[in-house]
Length: 295
Ligand code: A2P
Image (spheres, rainbow, N blue to C red):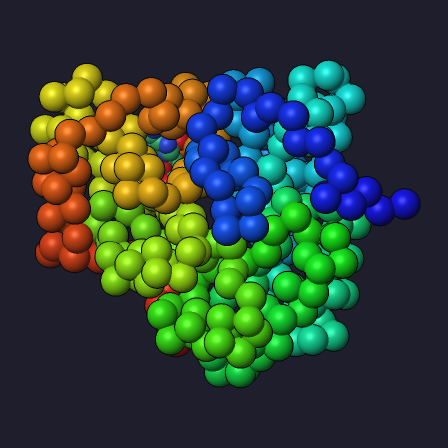
């Protein structure tokens, strides 16, 4: 039997700060990005994260680790560390899963691999404009929410034009748009559009893959607040109103990243960090979704 998320009593999410999505769902503001977390090590890291207080885990069919995430969740639930309802699990449909028939099939396969009866958030992973299927794909994702199989639905890596197009064509505003966002690439125009539409920004690679962390501006702020540069980068994105999903395999850094919830940056500190946007050597690190295709 499918347990409809509308009947899930979410209970508490521990001490985790949450944001409210446009469909009324609470999302923990810090999650764990699970890209490259595989096998035994992946299970160990995710269980460690759960015991540290993480409640939000982000995976995707393309990461090849939905079984790993599902196993860690099942083991943690069986051990009494957490209940399913306390967790927020996101997964995503890859380019070769797009289309009105592809999406329901892909979703069912993801649920099977995760060993879950529902997911909290289901996303179209990239618009892949060369395929021209992103509108029908988001429409199919939105239908899954209507059927009660996904608590919330959204998109990832959608730039302004395609985001507006799906809102206009489908008539459903995605709950989130998950995009590359870090102090070197603050996505200010896209965040302004999100605010206008009521879309929550989820920042992937909020540490800029760790590359940014030696930056002198971040270092000055970090010294002033007595925190690490990683915590400052996460806190900056959180104060911009974003959800952050940093990756780490290291227990000390997992705990450190969670503690980005415990302090505040001043307006001047926020502005100094926002001023890093696009500076020499910064900017987008990963693929541009306008040209990132189906392969
Ligand atoms: P590690 O797994 O050894 O902790 P992003 O999420 O922006 O893609 O960044 C992930 C990278 O940042 C990983 O290489 C990870 O390495 C590193 N990282 C994660 N948390 C921290 C932290 N608190 N301090 C320094 N590096 C970190």
